[in-house]
Image 1 (cartoon, each protein chain N blue to C red):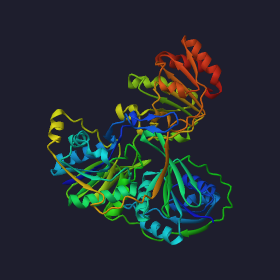
Image 2: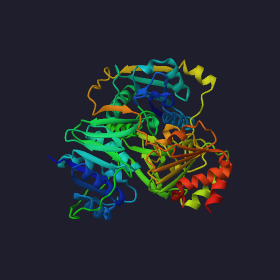
Image 3: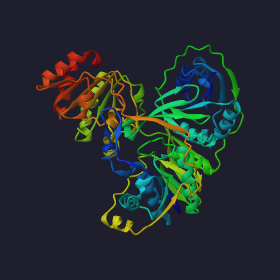
Image 4: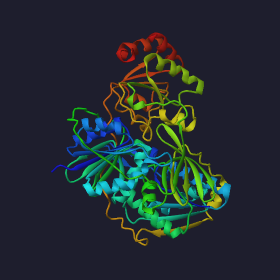
Amino acid sequence: MSENIWVVAQDAKAAGELCAGAQALGGVVHAVLLGCEEATKAAAANGAQTVVTASTPAANTLLEGYADALLALFEERGARLVMVQASTTGRLLAGKLASGLHTSALGATTLALDGEAVTVTYLVYGGTAVCTRRIISPTAVVTVGGGVFEAANAGADSAAIEQLTVTPNTPGITLKATAPKQGEQVNLSAAKRVIGVGRGFGAEGDLDLARSLATLIGAELACSRPITEGEDWMARERYIGVSGAVLKPDLYVAIGISGQVQHMVGVNQARTIVAINKDKNAPVFKQADVGIVGDLYTILPALTAALR
Amino acid sequence: MRVIACCKAAPEEQDIVVNGDGTLSFERAAWKFGSYDLNAVEAGRQLVEQVGGEVIGLTVGGEALASAKLRKDIISRGLDSLNIVTVAGSAVPDTLQTAQLLAAGLGKVGSYDLVLCGAGSSDEYTQQVGNQLGALLGIPTLNAINSITPNGTTVTVERVLENEVQTLEVTLPAVLSLTSGANTPRIAGMKDILAAGKKETTETTAAALGVDTTTVSAQVSSVVAPKQTARQRTILEGDVAEVTTKLIELIGADLR
């Protein structure tokens, strides 16, 4: 028997990925698109049989205001699994839905459905371990991040379109203003090449050594936790680790990074890992394809010059 | 303002040892309150320093919470008192149960204006307890809060989304989960630690609160170290020019 899987997404990329994932799990796929009607095509092309669109709320309300309407929808249509895009909004929605459906909301790095239970895995203890849980409540609510599934875009593109007609409402919460986030936007999970910097850099200005190399080879710059939470040298979006981004680049270069499990778990899926560190006992070398034991202050300029 | 800061103790992850078979050994890992929970305590303290009131800690956990050192540690970070809900045996409540236990614990605390949670716990980091708690309580609930400004019966908050920052007005009481960058938790001084021992700690049990912790919504099948991808582990050492040339020889295609 095929199970009803509902996808909740806010953009076309997530709609495509999550619907493709739901289809891969063998479910009958339905999607709710929050304020992103244009994602209908992506959802349908990835197997959604039903697409429910919810329009962008009025200026002072939040997408989270659809929570009660979604809850009613999932109860009425018999959802076995609800897969929610793992954004800030998606997480809050997932929590609300989970409480309403009398279950726990979990984040998933992998997801399986075996008829009786939804099994999810996610990182625990700061990336030290992977926890596998079988969700035994009648409905499972799971948030799914970017890149967990790949959009196939191979579907029939023939979804039944419905519209959610309720007005979203978040009592006691008024949106006063929305401003673009300060600083540059970065999407590490989409980058093909990533250079990570860590404590081995003595001063903020020294990061330019890594920046030059990054520019030269077309890599995004990323960092370990101390660089953003201890030193504030780089934007939080650039931090790799269990609570930061999880990447799948072709190349990852760890420079001045010791290789704590919490960091390495974020780059474990890189095709090639290069490490540069002056401490030859640094754990990073055990997880690198090529390790250079040496001073980043001499190696980086030499490497950049050699590649130029 | 009466602020409740929710916090959870977990084994220090840096001291968890991975056994040969990938299972974990917690023998050398002391319990500590999660670093993100300290953001909740700090935010509460800062609010109370501005408008007066008290910050009450609320925690759910097992036997580890019996430790006087652990209790003093969290109190010394800025709490006026601590409420503990203990769960019997080795049961680890899931996010729904934790939210239910916190909701029941809040009933014991009495009235409150604001419930604060950290970005996530240091063990499970599901980032959901605050969201689920707020839904159970049926009061305004937000996550990813970066700043809180009190204005009487409401607070103005800044919430960080992926590409934008929202400014919202929230009617109290409310449940807010913070970002890890919302503040820098204070380091407790000797005076704070000594004073912490004298502050009130109230204890109750899940059973006494009438919360069933036997039926979880998601059973743990395994907790094991992540599988490492096999790596070449070629180590280059020595002359800078030589090692860079060798690196380019080995992975040049990836660099150009």
